[in-house]
Image (tube, rainbow, N blue to C red; front, side, top):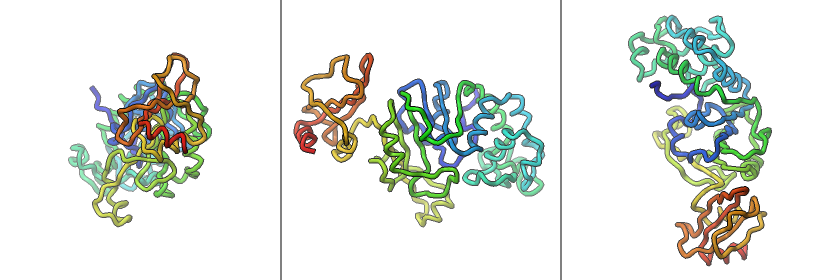
Length: 328
């Protein structure tokens, strides 16, 4: 069985971190800021729509969705030399993009073959590095080439759109939103971010919404998810040595909510305090609060309650929390 792996390298794609995020609750997954779509690749059998304003990223995904495995296997590894402009190799536009994105992470504007030799790959070690060494192919080598040729068969049903998040239709789905981080401006040239607008957009979606950020972001009430080692050069530039960065998450289906988070979630919503579990049929989009003597750690717990024809937000809260909400 072919080992699962990313289809191309992309800065911030969260390939190793995808396992920390909630599993999709819907058959349709929408990658609102697609990039390398690592989360979506872990659930490749679902229906997937990718949205990204970067023409190269959109073109590369379109190529991978439709490419013939034989063309992938014909892409060169052997005979490449460091410094060669990939655009001079006579490849198709999609093939050239694939090689380009496997050369280095975080420098997608560079078209030359890298002199990097990936330490984990035996082929790169055996073929050496340097201007005339066959192992100087960045992170692209025969194992990756064959894996890509096999894995593209898993994404034939995917769709990709060169568009920003604001152009995504409001459909019921799992939305995975991994935008450029608020405190890392300029990393992605095609993204012009209005974080307050993005935050309001995330809250307005129907279905499950999962939003990624880093510690310090304030455009949604994020909470810690996991810690990760950043890139060495970036950590050095930020003056934090070998420190790990804290990845944050916001989702509209958080099970435990602090009072400020809960009040923010209910802002502008009408809610009803109930005395028993909701009936099967509830008003679609309703917010119901159920007083409970066994509240969560922070005094309240929120779940999406799915009826036969509708969905509501059910909040279980301690009686004193209910009174605070009524007063707010």
